[in-house]
Image (cartoon, rainbow, N blue to C red):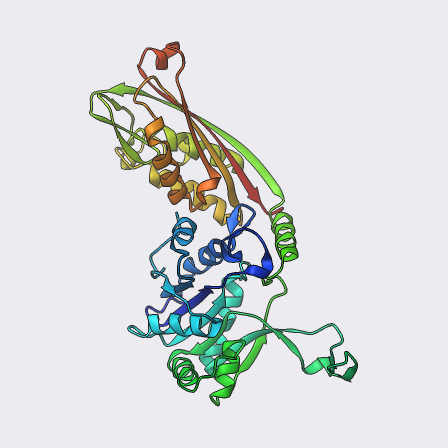
Length: 396
């Protein structure tokens, strides 16, 4: 699907309290496979080239949780979050109003609690909305459905051939949906359970396209267990790679480690920026992929890499994992030197590496040690780095 700037936006509804799911925080901020539900949702959406805006709606007071969630996420199309309302309906309207200053042609409404939304499903939603103006994903109902009365007795059995279980993202022409939400607010209607219901009430015809069984909604505690199992099954090829790098000191007033400049009375020498930390991590990631090493992809004999920032090498390795349909589960970096002191910079290093890798901060470890004045690091002749990368891939 071609990218059409400022035409297609998505509102991500993440303003609920998520009490039914249990836990010590709202369900959208609880983790599956080490990453929060909301983070997984956003990471899928912001990488879709045909979306021009991703508008999160969060609960007032969840700003710190949200800031932690988006560390390392591509923010090119990710708008600042807007506070939601007391109901899902009010939260969706808040998201639509946030987009109204630069309205798209088509808007998708997606529940953050569906973290396994696929690119294919989003593309189907956009295609259907372009044809009909309003479209929702649905799954055929396989169970027998019956109505019951107040006494718990069966009223009638419904024809399941005409029934669909409805999912998100739901897709609409932007202006009619915004007008329907505004009208509902004016008339005090706050009882709609999804946006299709508002569209139907406003007189719009809503089409149904094929949903996906894997597009599950996280609602109850058992849903988290199911999601963990599905994630593990999808990425069950667990790989570990290691990387080692060393660079000698030379004239200068700072060293580059983990993409950060750390003041020092010397610099590290090398063909690129001599970032010993990122170089070790690149080799660890490539090792887990059995995909050569940093030198094979970025040979020091090539003049284009002279003085290059090593975050280019690092993001290349990260993208190699994504291209294989995998994820980086954990990065562990150890810096060995007598000076400069790494401890004061540890948190900043972790945050920057997490940002570059698109990882949650909990998936990046940075440690530092000396070599007890032994060897070249002990003589303060340079710095060494050791890295381990754990990568999860689908079985091929």
